[in-house]
Picture 1 (cartoon, rainbow, N blue to C red):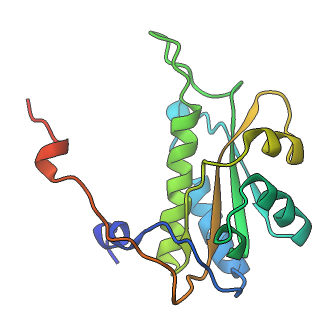
Picture 2 (picture 1 turned 120 degrees about the vertical axis):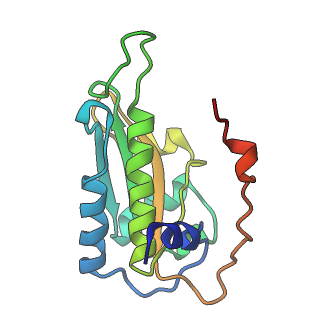
Length: 170
């Protein structure tokens, strides 16, 4: 499959089967994530694999949606605010950008393996801090549920702006 096909297939899957994600698929996804680029190669990230029933129950408290609870596996993507690259001219931190690139690597690698994923940012941040405490400076950026897509998983039509609406040539 070429990259355009992969990009076209990737969507926010919001219903999964109970079939577990294989260790081989998870290892592949994590290796693709490890290879993601970051500003000045700082790699200011950490990824928590949530697979135990106890950890899943905690995560469901952070984002309590019926569809979310159907995933057999989750990855919490965190950034280290003390280790990301900071642009000297305006002091802009690039940790969110770096982790976002890595999270999309997770989603695209999952798609390539025939799995579904969904980028979740609308969770209870206070609950996340309480239930998944991290050292000072670390912050959760996204939760990515991963699993085999249910046959009746809703798939919204992929609507994107036309090329002339997003490209400017000088």
